[in-house]
Length: 482
Image (cartoon, rainbow, N blue to C red; front, side, top):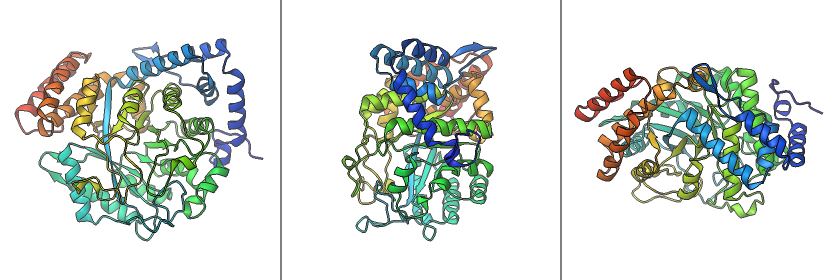
């Protein structure tokens, strides 16, 4: 029987079933141990270290105890701590992005996804390069600067060469003042050599959701196709990092398996990346199973309530303080609004989960991967964020300045976000307001920017940011960055 080893490169050892089950048992036994819970919360609090703040994060065992605890006042304390950590290391910035679906051809048999091979009535589509350009222009006309490209796994229809060609096309499109400055990639597990090719193509983050860390369930949920190989899928991030990709994004699909098992497995994966590669995940996503063509989430009996979902988000933020956390338009406006105060730092806006969806006037449903709950326009989402005290950020500076992997983490850990990411967010928000915003959004935005500029600690940085913002407003100059 495999033993737990955080530094092992074998999936069954760094995501060890025995260790997960023991952790769940430990959490259940200690969920009312107030002395232990208080000590865990104290350990997780940010503290001053040199000129900045430092967070130790939590082990998967400690974090599991917090998640198991259902003492109302302790849960409230967790929520407050999660918000404090997010504010301390990311400020009130919320990074904006949109998914771009390239193709829904897929050879896998995943039982929870409408793209599965046996679904014969879903419309199969694959974008040509001209159609990719049209989608990108539609996204640029909204104001997006950052995309996450998605494609089903199909070696014939969606080979790596097709993905690379699409990335090249996306980066080549400059329309009015629009440009996609960062392309993140969410495609199937692949080889070290293909990850090198993605890196050379200039991708940002490589994202791959585990779906479930429970191996037996994984094999049942992925009965056919290359994705059936649990080990190859679970070990993909190690190959991606070996291929030179600094930033990787983890996630599970909550609702497929017991949430505590997934939560512990997710944190063990993050610990593994830190132990082996010296840097944890750049992002962690928290999708929940949603209704889609021929998929009824009610057939899965591991669904989680909104309250438990929020608790999971807060506990991930406390356990992995420096990671970006993503919530998509799968969730409603209400749930997304609450999650922003519990650690979320990135959200999608105006998403369409169908192939070719952005060029259609009406939202198409015939090739959607899942139902979109939050169907507001990007302008509505931007305005809503600002009304609630958040700064919508279209910044991609760190990626283009080479501040990725451990270099980004050291920036985050040193507390330099207010002198770097914060002014970059304000400058890119100014671009959005000038080029795409409605009059109401513009008015709210400039008031927010005026107040937020005062928070930049270094006088020189503040002066440069103010000067650049004037230039953006009074000339056609764009893309200033620290």
